[in-house]
Length: 537
Image 1 (cartoon, helix red, strand yellow):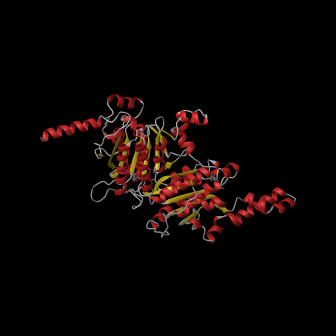
Image 2 (tube, helix red, strand yellow):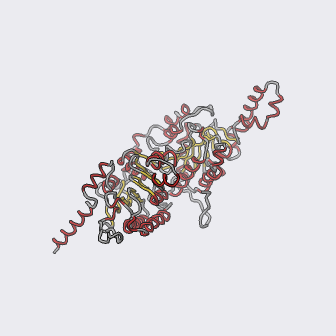
Image 3 (cartoon, rainbow, N blue to C red):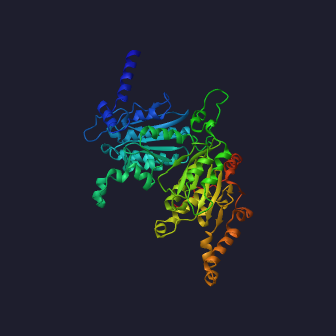
């Protein structure tokens, strides 16, 4: 009896594992893609994955296909461990009915979403699907709605990561769009609302799939994706790394990577990540920060790469940039300072002089709010001349987009620390986490310039008549510029009025940040009881 029952179970399990069939699995490999289960094996710690609802079958009742029953219904769901932490997953299987979404396919995903929400653990949703299953009609559309509803319910509660490793079109795009982060693999990942044929028919525009919704387009132009990789293996390693900066849910603080194993002798997931921030790799603080004097020119008109600054103030090799190819005038990403996970927002003088435009404002605002959701402290590196001027910016709604950034910083209750390195002018100074916008600590370097605008522009406006009446106009203008800088722009003026907490030397930056983060670790803010704010979207 038992022997026969176990034999039946083994046959059913084997059928589930080979649901797509050898030919379709080979076709998947030839197209440069892994299978759903291979992706899960690559993502999770070895031997930890547990499948859920694996015996569920598809139910297709129309088009004379009422007897079509496919095990698993084109998606693998379950949970496992990533660096020792419980994480939930759904992985669409393109070898089974093209990974198309039907009633039971969506039900499996919705159930695993509910489990992740209830357990307050991250969820990873791997997309490789032909879209809604036409044979199931409205049940397919209803299935998408159930997933979107759960994405929204879990937003800001648990980290949600979408992975695009195949087609993701039509309504399917909106589940990844609601997630916190989207990973995409170049060459195989595709995202678009309507395909090239529909675009051609409706708007008479010809384009390829890559031009419409390829990974490079979404990384650099649309800003839809956050991380792009050329290989699936690297993509899944990137996901594992991103999770190391985030807590399991909003109920926990951001992780601190410990440099020594716990006294129990058991290596926790934090300790297992030491390869990222091993204590042996950390260099002396003063030596690394001393290099900032050589990196950042004292002439505020000269550009430099702010990534080099970030590398000096963060633990070695700990910075993970987010959306690195989109809106390059602002850099955002995760790093560590003395093991503490932090979120960094920085102006990038190498692009548009570090000014804020509508895309950069969106990019920064989204990142700030994500950090605030998951209790990740914010460190802001300021070198900003202005919000980008011009008709193109105004017509694209820079007022609306810039307001998102102001709203995000004002709303955030996590520790917020700013370092004004050089320029901090006008409304852009306010937007970059100024003291009166809720910054807990604001440091300024000795050469920082904090004012309504640059000295040259201010003098040309305020002293226009005096310059025009002067015998030597250029000499008079230069004298007034220097006088303006000395009287109004130096950081001691702002410090004397309490807008700057302390003026520090560049080589003291990391030491001060460490102390501030330690002091702010138990920060708690009473928030008003309301339904929710109305961010200017």
